[in-house]
Image (cartoon, rainbow, N blue to C red; front, top):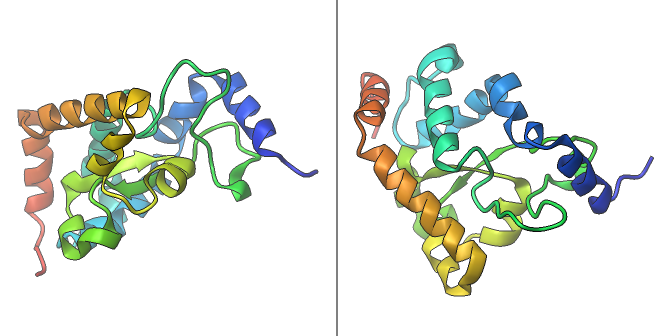
Length: 179
C-alpha cells in the first residue's frame, strides 16, 4: 500500500505524545548507536555502544528535554504535525529521530563536530527546514520558528551550564580524546 505524507502526518497526530517520545522510551539503543559516530568526530575515540545504558542515554535524554521532548523545530498550533519522517519511514506513527548540527557541517567543517552542537531532529527538520544552514541563520524567517529556536537555544545554554551536564561531559571526557 502506498503511503502519503498526509497519511503519515495523520498517524503522527493520532499517536499523540507517543509520536514524539517512542524512540526515547523504547528504542534508545538506535539513537545511542547513531550518536557514536558524531562523538568520535568530536574526538571521543573510545566511545562505544556499551555506554548506551549510562552516559549516552543520559546525553540523549538531557538534549531531548531541552527540546521539550519534541524535534528541534517542532511548533504547536497546526492541524497536523509539521515535523515528519523521510518517505521510507512514513509507515511509522512516531518520529524517527536523527542527529542534526546547530552549526552546519556543510558550513563549519571541524567546528561543527562537538557534543554541544548536536540536537535531535525529524528528517523534515534536518533536510527541509535547516537544509545546511546554521540554526542562527534561520532566525531571519521570524515568527513561530524563530520563537522555537530561541526557546530551545535558551534551554540548551541553561543545560550546558548545569552541574548535571558537567557531570555527563566529564564522564565522556574520561575517555581518550583523539585529535
